[in-house]
Image (cartoon, rainbow, N blue to C red):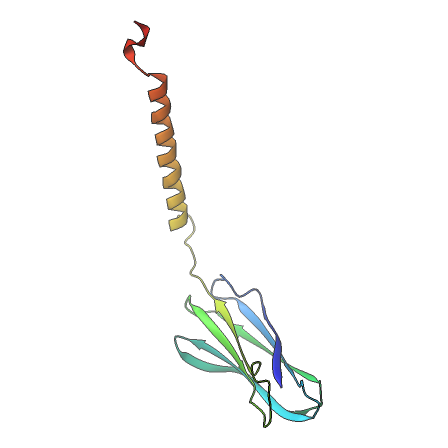
Length: 151
């Protein structure tokens, strides 16, 4: 039994709180026997895990799949990195267990107030002003090399 084809829409990096995410995971019976299995989805932030969705136990025929789809509304959540964990129990005599647990991360970032400059923008403007000032001073120095040159 293994978890495969994890998908989170929209792309979970660098979004503001308030986005509703659609989370999909596929549970796949990779063996040649019918097996009973389930899958759990939890959401973890700051070490605190909370259940988000559960795919109940069911008999899965060899090489069959089942899909768990859930939504998570990030409205009211603080900017942070949230971890999604997908679990399916290890079955008796299961030899490949590396795909019984998979993780996925969602990053929420703070809003930038309208009209304000970010630290990156301020740093970029500062470099531009200092560079232009340095260029202007060096240009004037080259232009007026020495007052005595005409003599």
